[in-house]
Length: 145
Image (cartoon, rainbow, N blue to C red; front, side):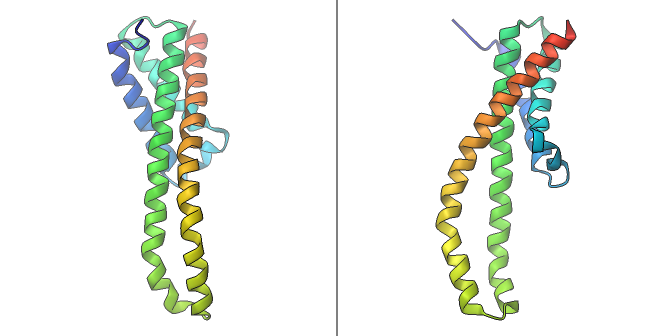
């Protein structure tokens, strides 16, 4: 039994990429406090799917969940890029710190927890993205009727 139709793949990626990129932009990411951008990725996916064929509720649910998880993945990658940019600024910021030894100890102890948290964030963003993307997909399907 196939859960994903071939017509669903393109809308899933488009909705996920749009939701993920929007949730990675700092000012627009404020809308993600209520997971609105993950819901938006599911709605975009459902809208694009309804233009291609007549999807069922199961199709809306699966496609919305997958696009939300893609949005979560892109959001996580955006977070890693932000952490990477912060890490490149540390050597320049140390010259402006009055207590350089304390600053070096603080930044050195931040690295292992940040690695653990980035793995946890990956899981959290993917799961929350899938849940709210599925909600967005099914909402669009029910409101369209």
